[in-house]
Image (cartoon, rainbow, N blue to C red; front, side, top):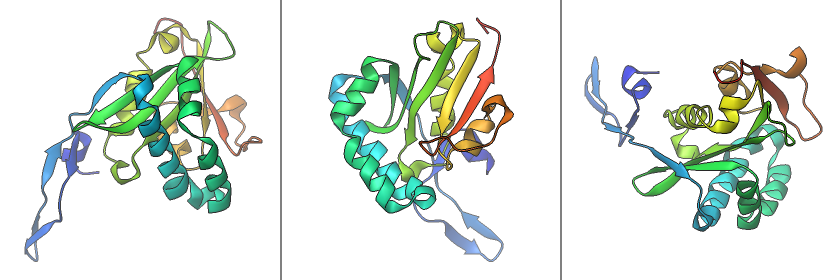
Length: 190
């Protein structure tokens, strides 16, 4: 990844070839802003998630399975997840470009779970996912937990592993929902 992209810039427009040894690449600072989910965000978040199912996850799970999942992932489902978690949206230029949530794991005070982490497909690889994880890892559910779990799609598993999440109990196998269960242990309060 080029240095500019590591620093939060994204490519805009097409590269311009100056000569056979040099191209000009236009970058813009992303300035992604995070905030807590609000009820009026539900439709936009639903659309973002559905796009990921169809455009990204279908490569690993097939279009038929992802279309079925997308059909169920409506604004009501998003609002339900937000009711039981701390959901954040990530905006750039007034548009929701990412979402992520963290919740207590089955009511535990020492375990939490990361949920519903998605970035607009055209902005994958631009640092927004990193911002989502960093934001969730500052939330009170993360801070108080000793163990954090993520039900990771095949597509996202290696991304999460970069943040120190590894296969639950050291076992790399898909669960009944087609996820790898990843976990991270830490001292509470760290």
